[in-house]
Image 1 (cartoon, rainbow, N blue to C red):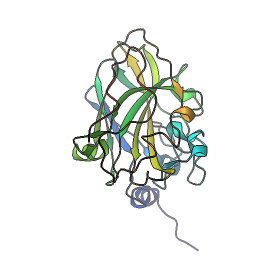
Image 2 (cartoon, rainbow, N blue to C red):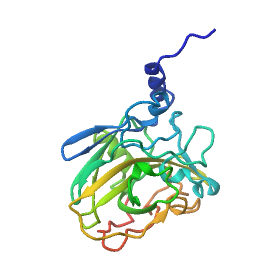
Image 3 (cartoon, rainbow, N blue to C red):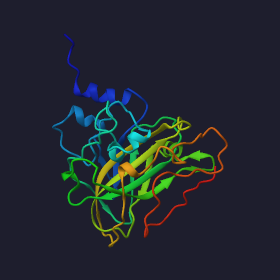
Image 4 (tube, rainbow, N blue to C red):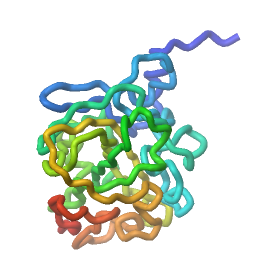
Amino acid sequence: MHAPISIAALAALVTSVAAHGHLKTITSGGKAYPLIGPSWVYQPNAAGDASWRSGNQDNGFIPSDAATLASSSVGCHKLNGTDTTKGALAAKGAPVPVTAGSTLTVTWDQWPDHPGPTLDYLAKCPGACNALTNADSLQWFKIRESGLKSGTWEAAQLSKNGLTQSITIPRQIANGEYVLRHEIIALHGAGQVGGAQLYPQCVDITVSGGGSLQPAGTPGNKLYTSNDPGILINIYQTLTSYDIPGPYFPSGIANVAKKFMA
């Protein structure tokens, strides 16, 4: 008979299986909020936090083949380790309070040397975000993106910045609860169809002090296609620019150039 494995040992296993990481904190208004990440599955009765309940205990990714990109998992990661087509469960806890126009930060626990862009989206919840089952009904609009600048991929820059990404919440968006979708797309295998790897991480926030803007969005299963120039790309060739994938910024939200010179 095998000896039982402790919760602590199982949780440690999450970070040792592979080098890919998860969000460990979100900081807003000078306060850091811990995120349980994939360890929730080992502590199902733990007090809820603002992070979505994904099944990436294997430190896995969402592949970029056409079938998977049209599935529920693109929104907030997969539900379990063996099926990449079903989406993660909504957070159980209260959303993180954020003031419109302020800059929050998210911090990963680790990230390997995988080049690629980072992107951030918001989706407004119809009421309380933790009342949702999954992300299927959410409409995502982009609020930040960064790809390749002066020969450095943003994922590498994130590592240089202590695994922390700064995200400014648009000043003019309406108050209410939103899901923040923070994502790294790893491109080291993107030279073939399905080779790009998506690492979306979702956290609930509640915005105050905002305006009246309610941007239209895009469902998670329509954010990308397998042949998008920023998804299917050989990054080992000489690049003069990189087309960051996903929809353009909505009207009323400051745009950032989609092409970044190498």
